[in-house]
Image (tube, rainbow, N blue to C red; front, side, top):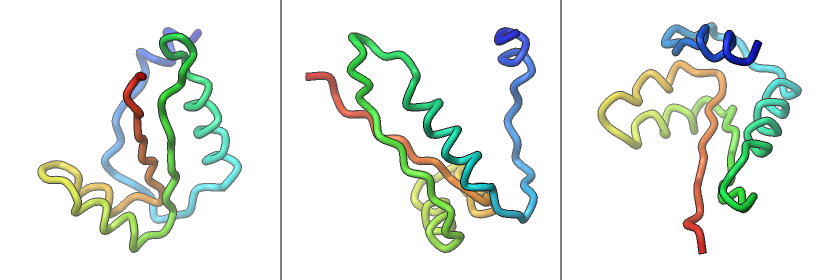
Length: 84
């Protein structure tokens, strides 16, 4: 079942102009935090951004190819700490 889900995965570049429910954002973030890592260190942090102005600014922070983020209802940013 999981393999079928992974095979059906696709990247969406067209977005609807509606908010994502907080419950869905929380579920996605909890799932990301449960991902396995070497020695179970989990060296990452995630931030979900729902403010459209901030998302627009983030879309301009990296070229090329990040402009489509300006049309997103939500954006997740990850930060990995180096292993120590």
